[in-house]
Image 1 (tube, one colour):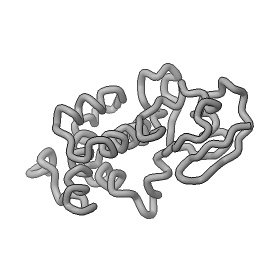
Image 2: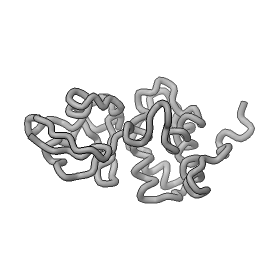
Image 3: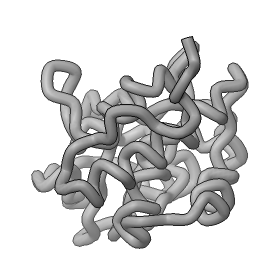
Length: 168
């Protein structure tokens, strides 16, 4: 048994010591935002935030996370009430197939926790660990910029990012 603090709530789960957090999230807790992509920590579809840092949940044994703060995409908002970062991804139309987006959002969340006003270079470097096979990287970067601008403006997302201005 291990007690996991996920999205502010403690969950007691029974899992073998080496069971990846991803399987606990999806199979036991029905938190399906984190996706199984490669199982090797190479794509980032399973990214969650642990104590403020992005983590590939497919590689992290759940047994090592007792007492730590785990945030999944479900902890940032809901379809009915998306959080500001999620709304920035929606506004920038950053999802095509949507498979990578939860991991991208969580990686961006970790960046903005640490660096609320990141430079373009910081955004690109931080987001580089997650892959999008559909090719919406530019929209993803624009969503992160939008969220950072929105936070700077007091929690509102910017009306239009530089990447979307003039685009129809």
